[in-house]
Image (tube, rainbow, N blue to C red; front, side):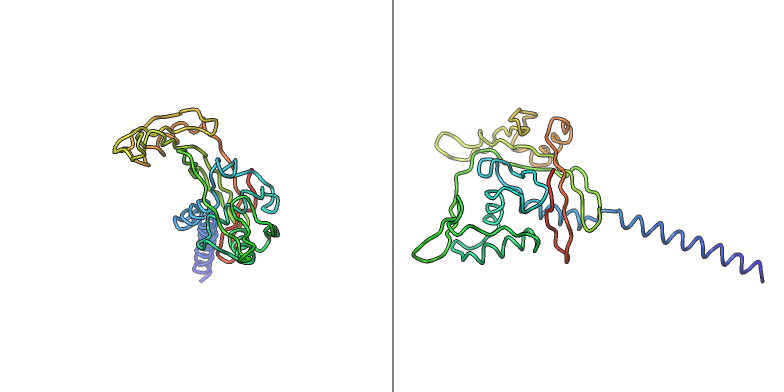
Length: 227
């Protein structure tokens, strides 16, 4: 009887140890669905250098992020052409959480203009260059209430994709550049996005990286800081 109890105790200890080990593994494993969610959110807040100077600026708190970048992120995610001030600020909270306290300026911003006749704000378009600001997730680590994400930043130059008449060519060169505009690799357009990512991974030491802290609240991700 004592031997049976001893065996049961040993098995119980093994079971509890296995459970704790599995629990820790599950806690630190990044699921595909989490990666997809992070990718989707970062794509919403990642901008264009020619518009906001930096596609993703550094800040220690979302309320200290540059105003131009903040409101252009909001603008990119807006679906209406005309909006009330309240609509803009609500969208900002949706993107940046209830901890976001910046107020949209009454006079509007560089690309969101106030219309005195309607009392609404009109979102204006802007001309973009041939450079596509892009990022690649390098590493994801779970932290308390969120994730620490390291990204590689790079540029895709499509300058040769258009002929002198403004028509899109069937084949052309895509230049993969770092943020200093140095050409790191040249690929053919028919080689696709996977080839670009492959070249970025092969030469990642020549690209800039940033660390992003994302907080998870009520199932939603919010950027907290970028360094």
